[in-house]
Length: 117
Image 1 (spheres, rainbow, N blue to C red):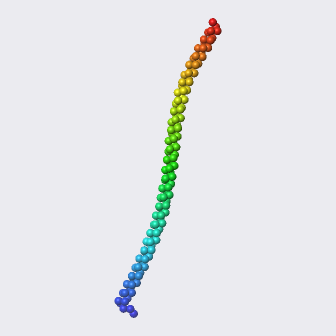
Image 2 (image 1 turned 90 degrees about the vertical axis):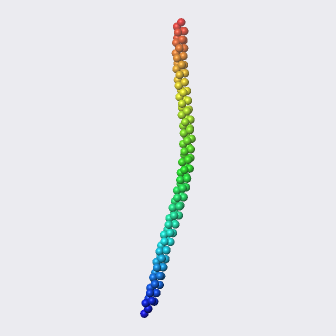
Image 3 (image 1 turned 120 degrees about the horizontal axis):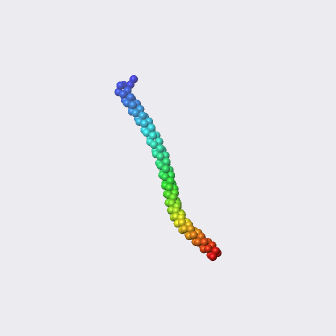
């Protein structure tokens, strides 16, 4: 049979090893969680990098489309200006046609009166 001091010593050694085993298990769990977090961080960084590239592509396409819209807007303004010029020319032509119609009427009237005489 073991002495009381020896029993205490054996119990303390067992407790020491049990605590260290528990600490080792806890340490392994923490290390596993840390590794999982690193994996999640890497995945998140990849997703953020991808999102950044997609955003850059969207920005580039938006810039191109905005430039095209601006160019089309300028072309539309030019076409509106041409339409206004055509409207002015149309009004002038209408006035000229009215003058010519009046002149034709007067000429026909003059011709008719010269035949009678």
